[in-house]
Image (spheres, rainbow, N blue to C red):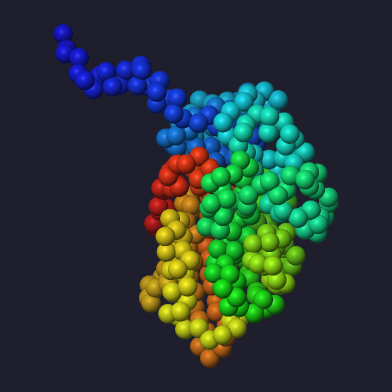
Length: 367
């Protein structure tokens, strides 16, 4: 007979039960889209999470790998309908814009903590919501209860929050790239120009004429040259109580994942590149998911979205134009990760006292 080892006792039912008890019960509403699928992938690999339920009205009753084939052999979860959801510890909302605020009371009854990845609660001013989304907000009295979920800006508030909203992917790339300069009052607040190049997944998984392969492949398509709704978030986070203007344009390119924001800042006072380095180090030197990328040679001298696919990093680079006050800032991220699901998990970790990078350690691929 094999002797019973001490480790056998540690691995027995009591230990297993204790480990399960330490996990938070988490569910996802609207898990069949790209954002929901990426969130599910991350949470399945999170050691402090038990994914209890995921919903999809379209795929109800089917295995999740029907919508997300990359999750084969990762889980046997099946999609459920929203009205079948049971209470949990944390509820993630990955619904199309406009739907979360219509059902927010029922979601609050299901979980004490909510993380909404839609645009419904990103803005805290009802008038600004009306301006950028073209309709009144359904629950304006709740808008200020949600913390804007960019940890690099609002870590302390997120850590104590019950309700957090995800940030727009284009807004996240832009804000993180230029935030230190606006915070320190170093730029002309009326002359900032931002152009983002984005991948096709930013449009979601619903098919359209624009996503039809013969129409989409090889396209360099300007789809929002002015008045992109993410400008509302940019103004909210960068204004610091003073008037400002950002001239923002968005272009889709031959890429599935990724955002590259090229930001043209016009400095109010002379800065050398060493001063820019110092500013970024002071702002982001201790941040786990921001990297300053500026090399003297090589093909990856500046941020490159290709290297960030599947990661929660935001890479930021810059170039000061000699003989002028123009500073070009380049900011790159994966729109489904740091621009959506990865940032939501980062906020989830902070809300629950976990290591901020837990479940987000993947460093990307090369080549």
